[in-house]
Length: 367
Image 1 (cartoon, helix red, strand yellow):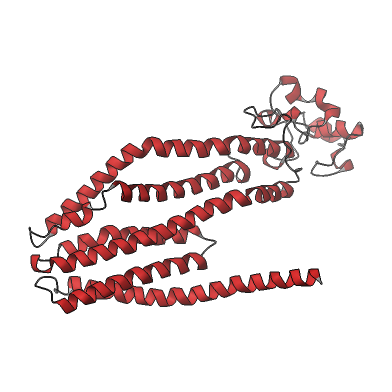
Image 2 (image 1 turned 180 degrees about the horizontal axis):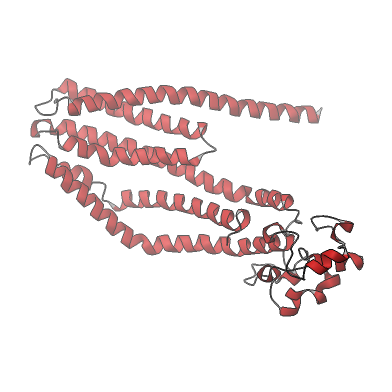
């Protein structure tokens, strides 16, 4: 009975997730429609010549309503989009970039169309565009944070499956605990064959086998010697007499000139890559955080220059010199807004650093 109840709970959970996605698809479509209508209305007000003269209270109220509608529908659309495309973070990043475009783009669009008499209408439009864009970016930032947490939480299971696919044993902690800053030599790893270690060129020359391109898991001469001595062949790509060479094969190949497998398919080299990853991963994460902290003053200066450039551009295209369009953009040059954007960028960078290290070391093995 317990098992049945457990199975029932599992089915309910699966149905709930699917139901949530179905509702999110519907919500995303409806929110996108409302979002598009609100933006279209605002753009019509901007480019339809309605901001060139005095704007009545009715239009002001409509712009206020459409601005609020844009913010709410934009937030709902982004949340639903994140749920529907949860496996693909790049889609969420695109939504975040669109939010940044709303924050910085609307002041530039309004600047060339608004007059002194319509200043209040222009302020309402840029204010709600900024709120909408920042809300969308915040939702995307939360999605990136969840991605980092899930990636770290699922990492042990993912790497264990990767090791299983490569025929490796589960990773074991070294005696004494802690992180070793020294990578093991090939002859110190669990897949090295003790029975022929003294014969191995790598051990004799004190150079790792993947440097010499010759070792006990890939050199037919060494493997034949291992088989003749009755050594274990559990980690060899093939078994038994496959490696016993006839006289013509012996005459035609010298030790070290023929290999039975590439390094990337060798359990010793793969164990070396696992050790390297355990060493590099925390170093790269720490280096990324330190780099972001060190670059903070420089990036803040560049951000200020960028905002100043946009503000001057907006002021240049303004129809009236008395409309403070530059202030609509310069308000984003505050420590709070800048820190908010920098944290989002830092989280995005950190998530890709984690993925890049695992891809380069464990999957592609190019590092």
